[in-house]
Amino acid sequence: MELFSDKPGDEGLPGRERGLVMAAVMTSTLMAVFDGTMVNIALPQMAQALNVASPLAVWFANGYLLSAAMTLLIFAALATRIGFRPVFIFGLSLFTLASLGCALSPDANILIGMRILQGIGGAATLSIAPAILRSVFPGRLLGRILGLNALLIASSTAVAPVLGGLLLSTLSWQWLFAINVVPGLLALMLGLKAIPHKPVLSGQTFDLRGALLSATMLGAAIMATNSFASPHAASHAISASVINWFGLALISGIAFILHIRQADKPLLPPAIFHSGRFSLAALTSLACFISQGVTFVALPFLFQRVYGYSAFTSALLFTPWPVGIALVAPWAGKLADKYSPSIISTAGLLFFVIGLMLLATLPATAAHWDIGLRSLICGMGFGCFQSPNNREMLSSVVREWSGYASGVLAVVRTFGQCLGAALVSVLLAVMVSANSVVEQDQAVRVCLWLAVAASGCAIVLSLSRLRRNK
Image (tube, rainbow, N blue to C red; front, side, top):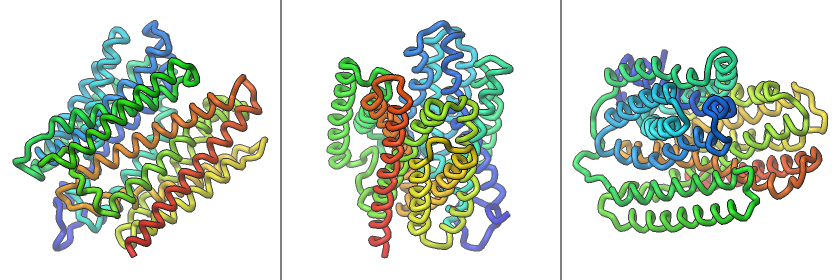
């Protein structure tokens, strides 16, 4: 297999060692994706089993998301200073132990605490996973390995709801976490054996003030978007909460920007954004993930409340999307190693926006195959965009800054999806006054056209990137 073949002048590790590192990184990614997706569908059962109200049960998911978002940049910067290996091993060990702690939790408070620790561990691995792959694979193979990573995530997204439903129907909710233990230990052994220990920027002090400001900024932004996504987002109390959280996010964000511009060794060097290729690729990714976040939250309302499908049928109707990503992403990554990643990702965006427009114009009585075909087009377009754009982000900075680039990539993905979900919540709260099928249909259509608009912004950004590169 070409991924593990060696050629004269290749940087990184020899072929066999690259394979071990890839197995460790992708196993940790697989665990994180499965965990997030399966837990969301288990919240009602977990709330009933632990005898807690739904608002508290939501923190079984939010605790993980919040702690992960707050620490993404911190771990990316820390890995740049002390090396990828210790940060990855720490994160994977914490995630695996916290998974066992979740499975053994006797009450809701301990479970939330374990989920917070799990989120910290997940952030440590996910924030640097693309950077680790770049450090061990030669540049000629970067697009291909990122394409395979996108294939893994898409396949996991498609399989996770089915596996989660199977586990919940045959076993208890604790097994959603217990299944992480064995793969986690295997990935840990592979990581200890194969990931090289080499600090990239050795001797640099850690920016503690920048870390605190970034955690406050990202955490407050997540809390603000979660407040928007609350079922009571239209109430005065929640509106005040949203304003307070956004205010805190804005103040800490401004303070963070001013700090990193003045600090000698900042948590995130502002010079990384001086590269037009990197900045435009990051903004393009943010707009595209906002679009995906909107669509993923809006479509279940269309399928279940407008078309009247069951939750299981709705999940099946989603399947063509990740299947489309799985079909295209590896080939798009391979092409990005030979041709301009910007051109390939822009072509993918055009295909993606066509698919979104087809979903937004679904007829009142759509056949299953029709919905699936339109979702497949979206997935193929997104798959064509994602891996070349990720390659563009990583390859546009020097190798020593790969950890920073990987952390920014994780942040824009997380916040794009969260912001998309929040926008859907706001539109549904404003446009749907009662349990009216007509109003819900109209609201969902507006949401889907909003996703089209966000993707249109991504296309504009990507086209400007093409002009700059030319």
